[in-house]
Image (cartoon, rainbow over all chains, first blue to last red; front, side, top):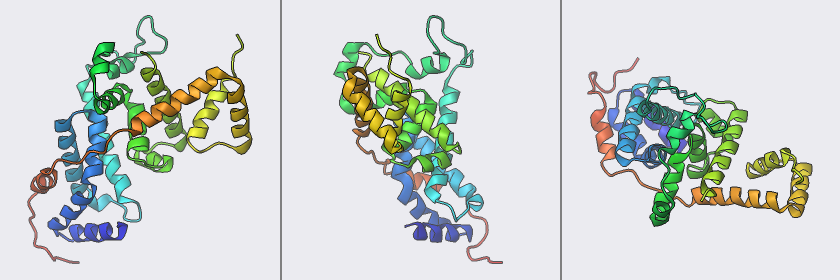
Length: 187
Length: 83
């Protein structure tokens, strides 16, 4: 597969725009899925996935073909998702600790939005509930958990996608699992 | 109340990452057999992972590919110009 993708990349770089269509076709579902899980909204996910492909096209000459194309593409998409999530947040003191909580700051508060009451949660379908719980996780843990457990990337690949040391990826994955565990057991 | 050493939780995560040394894995297993609190913690972590993995894979909307192609800048040069 990688050989075919690299062939298409070369064609695009030589000016054959239509060859890009195969690249989009091959990666569209995984890219859309990452965006959807990160953003929790279909319209936004489509928007950002499109944007990621367009940016990949525009910057294709900077892609090192000795590397894995999917990693590069995931990087573009996750960066766009994180930017989008940050823009949605109000810009007051996000790092300030919330009174009466231990180590909780506004980032974690916003990620949770307003937690739903128990009876609302019980009415949710499983799939809806999973997405809800994903969207309650702080984004720096969310992205690692999504790449690991939904996209099934290895820790090494995640470290390349996020341009982050392997140790940091592990720490975030550990914290992400703990965050999720607490969310699920808080009822 | 006896407090379990903090590294036991670390070992749980290393185990879940498939990245734990043999001796530490044995120590973890030994501890879990003795300590129901940690056993519970470990179960909850595994359940949390299973929960996330229960997501069904979703597909991109059928319009995505065409929309991307349409958004690409119009080509200026002719195909086939080579150095």
